[in-house]
Image 1 (cartoon, rainbow, N blue to C red):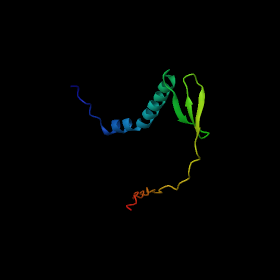
Image 2 (cartoon, helix red, strand yellow; image 1 turned 30 degrees about the vertical axis):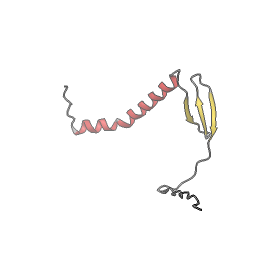
Image 3 (cartoon, one colour; image 1 turned 90 degrees about the vertical axis):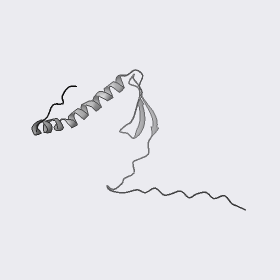
Image 4 (cartoon, rainbow, N blue to C red; image 1 turned 180 degrees about the vertical axis):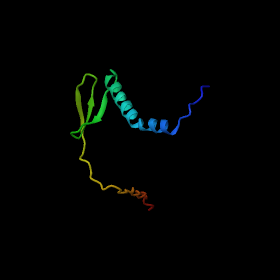
Amino acid sequence: MPRIPVLDEASMLSAELQIPLRAQQAGQAAHQRAVGSHATILVMKAPSGELVARQTSGQIKVLKSLPAATPVLAGTVFKRVAKRAFKADSR
């Protein structure tokens, strides 16, 4: 088995600083592969607030208009309300 190289602190910091750039490059490469694949239809949210499908030919088809976003204050916690159990009449 090959040995894992030991990194000093400067090398580790340098490698960690490259993580955001590498993640961006990976995301862009995945997007290009998805768009370039002839068997893929890319579904995404458009800036106009619609759900659209982009076909490999470049044609865009609107699937659905999405409702406006609900403004929420940062830190707001939502709790799910328990549904009441349905009781059948025992008459």
